[in-house]
Length: 254
Image (tube, rainbow, N blue to C red; front, side, top):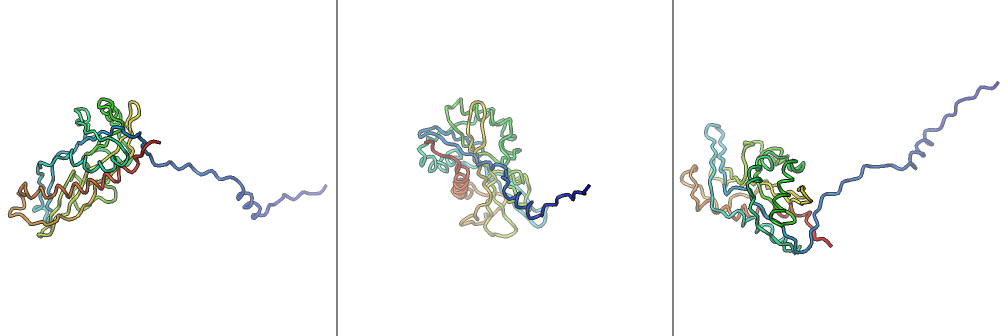
């Protein structure tokens, strides 16, 4: 009885077989988009306080300080100005909307404590949907505060500055050099479906330009209101850049 030798397939033959087998790759998730019909109403919600924070960074920690000023800037109107071009291009109607008590109470969880790069906290979606339904709008654009931390700024956060910095800020150093402007805010586009809201677009403020025409005040701990008002158009321009990013997914339904 003859002994049968096991068949050995050449490695090249195996490779050839593998080459003709279908390869199933995981389906890529397309970025979310929001298609609205012409004339749809988009609610504009402001959760940002009319404040600007000055942080003075000194080599001697004991000489560093922080002071927050209340300003008279019409933040809701600044938000409208930032988004009106994009909404106008699409034939959508901007509708200023008051945030309401429920959303204001949830500002910490829905903005300051949220990692919006990962989506909405689950308790926030229903709040947005309820607000949209009560105001008869098809979507929401919401401006709120963020922090100088990895959850908001990601790799762009300023490690040399405190993580608790939030909102609109400017930073001075030990010289009379122009302060650096920082925009620690989040601008989000929320789509609404039934009883849920979904995060569709997001624009993080980030770094801005230096304070144009800056002159150090006599007392660095007491900036005059008139001088702080020079910052309004600068932060308005930064807000426009946020809007251009956050509203990219917004489209006109065909």
